[in-house]
Length: 125
Image (cartoon, rainbow, N blue to C red):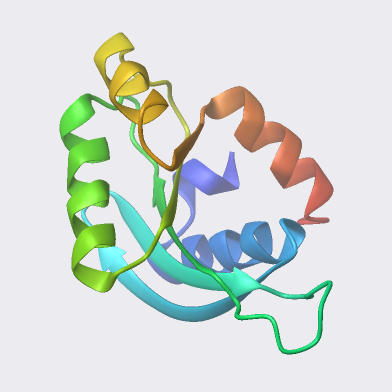
């Protein structure tokens, strides 16, 4: 519930906690319409000296279904920033076209059910 109703500042805190629960380290945060965007890297590396691969994560808190244009926008941003892995987490669901577009790209989609699981793991009050 807080994910949907929190102030923007609290929403960003929740998003950071989610990223940390996913064992990622926050590098940069910016606001996007109806959500926020976080650039993160893996917190722990299995091999010393291994290059940390960045991930671009977008959080959306909208009641409407996320369509393929949001996925395409993330993909374009990933190309510009030379990031190979993306993730969209939403409080709603994804359209069939959005899911089909993401299937052939390095973008993971987390809908409201997966969001609830992550929120439970992140120890948020």
